[in-house]
Image 1 (cartoon, rainbow, N blue to C red):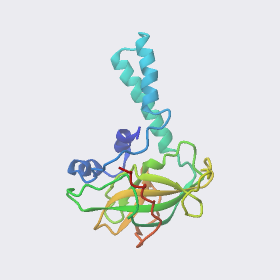
Image 2: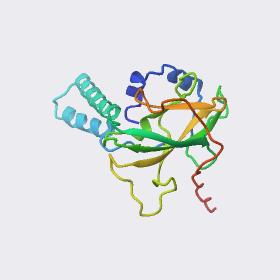
Image 3: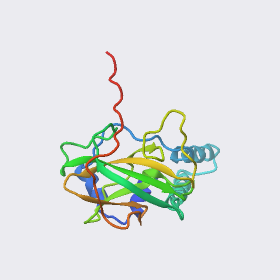
Image 4: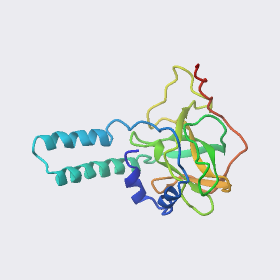
Length: 215
């Protein structure tokens, strides 16, 4: 996401970069496209000013960094006075574009967390919810495979809409997570969303796999 590198500087969990170095979460596939108004738009704005001769390369980078910091701050405060309620979590067997690296130093599985968000602001970023070991508080990262759900917990049907903040939204978040970690916590920009460590259930909703392509 647009604030991935900035968020790492803010996070309260210092171990995540080391996990990346180990190749723990070498996922295949790609995540959600950059949000409108992200670094691409910021770079375009800076590029226009640069082409007009207004900014040196050093000034361009300084302006871009300032834009990114401002957007990161908006996202960090995006939950506002709202809350995140965990409806359940389980070892995940359904479809996801995430795929844990079988050669990672730590054996990994996919897990799903079903949450309801309410009272949040338009700047709240679902991708910034971070999953953390319930005992050691070691972070296993953010940017989950996020899928909106109906408020009753089922899959959205054609024509269903997601209500704008601060109305309730329900989401299925899929993460890579160590097999030997039985509990978890959720954080958003250093703010704990779960009052205590939670356990994974045996099963829950699964996304259907796409139909096989015809040869």
